[in-house]
Length: 165
Image (tube, rainbow, N blue to C red):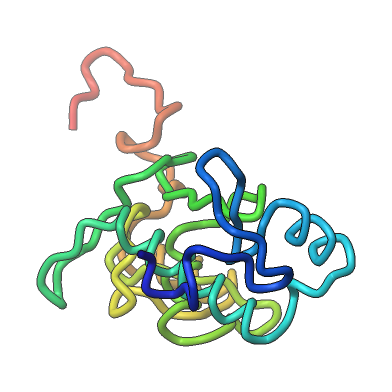
C-alpha cells in the first residue's frame, strides 16, 4: 500500500473499488481523474506541493552525490555537457533545478553559474546565481576564455619556418 494514499482500495472522489487493470492516478479512478483534471481541480496548493516533492525525489535519484565539497555529477541525459531533467513535457537544466530545489527560485534576469566549472555538477554548494557578465568575468579570471591574444596559442596562428618559440 502506498503511504500517500488514504485508502488504496477506493477512489477518493466517487468511492469506486479499485480493480486490477483500472487506471488509478492521484488516488482517483480514471473517470474521476479525467473529470477533475479537465476542471483544473488538480492544481490545488496541496497537489502542487506533492508534485514538487515527487519531482525533487526523482531528480536526486539521477545525481551521484558525494562529499559536500565534491562535484555531484548528473547521471541522466545531457545536452552540450549540461544535465537535462525532463518533467511536465519540458526539459530543464539540471543544475538550475538543483539550485531551485535548495535555494528557491532564481531571481529574474539571473542564471545559475558553476563555481567548479563542471557543467554536469548539481552540488548546490557549487552553484550560485549571477548575471552573464559575472559569468564571463569568472571565466576570464580562471583563464578559460577562448579569446587568446595573437601568438602560438591562438588557433589560427601561422607558423613560419625557422621561427620556433
